[in-house]
Length: 342
Image (cartoon, rainbow, N blue to C red; front, top):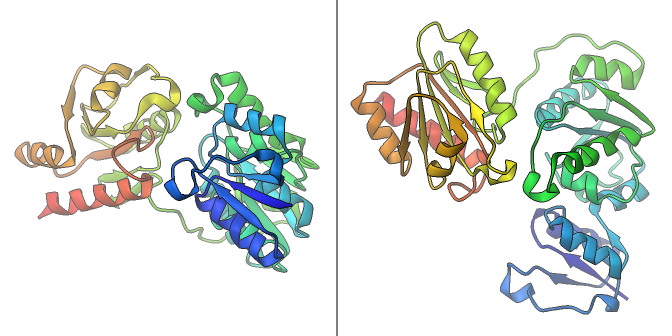
């Protein structure tokens, strides 16, 4: 019998590459792509290979009718590397990236999952370690935790539009702790020692872009800020860094956290722009808020007010209707600042 790829995004395409390599016949279903939106009889398939972005109710319905597998399930069953899973509301990618740099001094390492390559693209490639960034979606959908090492960084309210409430989100995140060995830690040097049983020499770790990144002395691009806990953290750092008043710029869709209420102190002004500006306005409490339809109007305001420094760009929400992802958002902010400095 054929397999059915359910969802044809990044993970769905990695399923396809995996099945072709295994010479397994398959069909594809994705309701958002017309040529793959044909309704399928799920009983006609040996298994359903489900992408992580499928919503929780739909996933539960799939499970009731067929054998549902994720790419994580397949990787756990077939891959021979030592598997390190890392999750948390904030800091997952950075911790994975830093730990990989330390391990790569001595070992061959895969950096895969929610950050890096899809896991099936690096299955059994001969590398000794696999560092897997795991989202709450992936943790919720996986059948069984077969990680050798599980790392939980932190848990703050997030993805409530998927999990419905914080307790369900928290339960998904805490599935990481059922690994063979687990720890709550974010220091990559401590994690290296915990995993390898020996200390690691200190090196200058490279950082990922758009994570509280200084693009000049007093302009910070924190486009990766996609929830209010990361926004609060950025503000706490900015309140220490800036000696004078500074401007906070926000944008994005607050739906993911069910339109949270947040009181902000520190910045002199908050500039909110984009398709969701009015929604963010209802979430944020601050005496000096200014709303703009898009980045061009925001730029015009900054130029007219001669604001050329002391700027924190920490959106606080996912991209929503404004951008494809936080990378595109970060790129546009850098472009905006380049125009501002001319």
